[in-house]
Image (cartoon, rainbow, N blue to C red):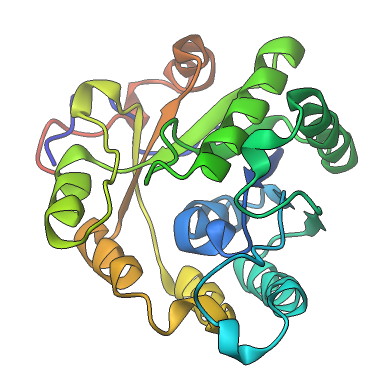
Length: 248
């Protein structure tokens, strides 16, 4: 991936991050490296998960997924250094049917409990087009707009998404360099530990492991309100900018 000169290579300076996701494992499989990077910078991190992920086709022979995935989420969050977890009861695969006001109310409560000054979400399009992911992001973005809270989205570089879409029967949504605002180097050690806590989902998941291989030690993110990029990144100075060279 070729990184534009104005793309920043460090995370924004905040005190508390709330990750809003749809399923247990999203916080690890998707947001894990970013959450652990915040934790390593002594930023408080919390997770709000909207469903128990009970409708998954993976791990169905292991028992009651509603119970199993709650337990896995707790272990994974601890591995990532996450300080607090709220797990809700919206229907897996049916989050899009939930009234947006109900979702926003839950997010606002979690923001208040965590003292969050940043929301972390999946990118628009849900990375794979999953309606639950998209609805979670839509609700977080609505709260961000109404409450003046910045929303930072985890995304994939277009070339990574295109390669995955070629190799697997899943349509990944990626972003070109003009839509990426942050490109950070990450240590995936804690993310891998968290992934292995999700035994019901991680063992037979070749798409996950191939994505991590293609991403290497880099994560890319974008502000869902581009104005936040100016407020949160450019004020930090040119010293945090990524050089105009290919990223790993």
